[in-house]
Length: 383
View 1 (spheres, rainbow, N blue to C red):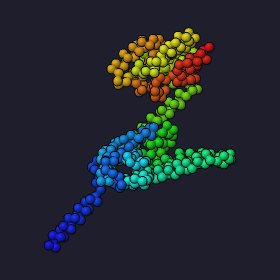
View 2 (view 1 turned 180 degrees about the vertical axis):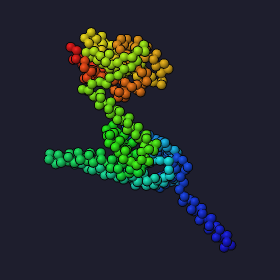
View 3 (view 1 turned 45 degrees about the vertical axis):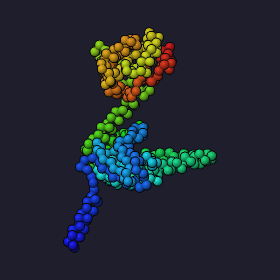
View 4 (view 1 turned 90 degrees about the horizontal axis):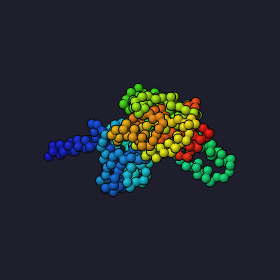
């Protein structure tokens, strides 16, 4: 009898040990969650944020007996958010193909505990610093609203300026602290999502992470993103009002190559458009009217078509028909490469219609004018 009891005790011990083992999958992520006080059937979401900080659902689970489980696979580590239908707010964490445990605090989401790879310790420290600055900003904003004294308001505004400087330093401070941690790459990529990202400084930060991280797949993708962002920044600088317009050459409808230099007049309009673009087609009659009125005075137009969308069966045919239908009698060029057109990239074109107005020296004097505003500018330059 004692032998049986001993064997049973040993079996229970082995079973107990097994339940404590990490349940990491061979590949992909496994998240086991505890949700005390949250009812059966409530949905739990894993979300990412797009460039406008809008949340996108990436995975969904359902609470059963105060527990939930996520299993899946992700291509690269990035910041995701855990949110629950019945709980206000969300908890950020760095998702990777690894094992996580999460204990939700339904009353205060900031107290939710997420245990996983060490990258999340770095993220917790990062968000702790950002929350402290957010609290400082809220406090200073409240003081500005309630204080009428001019000198005191000036002091608060100075504090705000310093706060903005401190805020811009936080990502780089945490990248520096985590040079051997994948969190550094996640922070760099997160910064690259910002319109105001300091891409040259981010390049320096990437060069300072350890070589293993830098040469990893995510490190190489990050380097490519930085390179692309630098090209966009250069294009933005090259197409500011007052800059000399970037030169380009592109195929005409008959297959010849035409350069901007050859197409220029006393005033030149570079008109980015496409046959599939409704607003462009609606604007074309106005451009035709302006061209007919001012061409004899020195107005030249070069249309750059961004046809080549995958939805077009025959992009060239669509382009040619639109030229004919809209009576566009000025120079036309296109690589039929949609927004990948090298001319569009050189001018950092993100949407169309888009216009650049050049003087006779090739200097950009105005851009993105349409309708009456475009005619008024042409009139000003040629009359």
